[in-house]
Length: 376
Picture 1 (tube, helix red, strand yellow):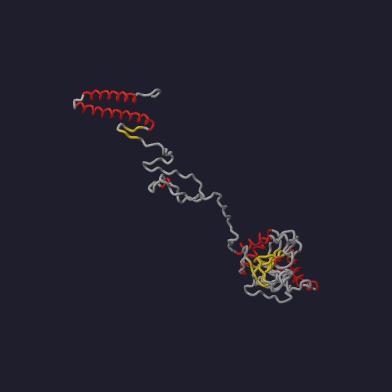
Picture 2: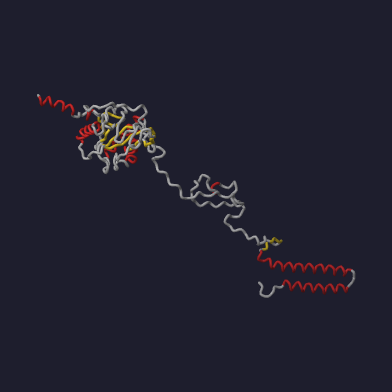
């Protein structure tokens, strides 16, 4: 009987397996699952409505190689240390804790019900809820299961208290006092931060702290159901084109297609500015020169038209000689007319002189029509 009676108080203190409580989709083991008999040693006030402005990540700095069955005992040990002479806090300091197996535990009494105020080494600035990894992450990072669970927990708390945890989002408040931010100091912090951002401490460890922006914040954004911000796009912009835009074309010349030319001969106005293509040659106007034909030299005279047809430029030198001959014949005809008029007057001497002159003129004309040496 004594053994049985003595054993009753001990059995009453052992953790009991209780169903998990859902916190915005995250399964949480309640305080009663590890410390139903460990009552707070002082009042636990809540934050005022709207005063949970950011979330803070911690680690317990305890050993990492624990078994899953040992977790309730570890929590009880934390409670004893925090409420003892070393710290003097009214309850375990953290709102929630995450073990290396990915299980989430309620810490400070009442945290599942509302925003109970918390404590922390170095002072608590308030305005936050705390999530703590069970383990020492000075040189060893949290396990993937623990990181996944912490990300989902932070997202659930963000959803519950209306905190925007997207990258680049900050919260501003007046500190209630810490060894880094004295009371009355205005503090601006990312809405998910590490303990070392608020107090002079190495918590949550060098192997964990860089994972807050790279792993925990993106996981929390997803768990909270928040759309990504413009500062963190989900798709990669295409690199700018390395092809310079085509310059504006000059006004068309007289050989360019007219407004009635078919549109297929002109570049399309809908082509993108960085399109590189050979531009089509302009079409020739009806009856006009072809675009790629070389224009005739300006020094070449136009064809000379005579009664017998067109005389090409190459033969115009002979035409000059022919003109001289024609002129000589015309002169001879005129002289003959003079002679005939005088003959009518009965002056035979004059006629003889005119005939002699005609012979002289004809002889000169024949010498001019005769080709010279080496010709043709």
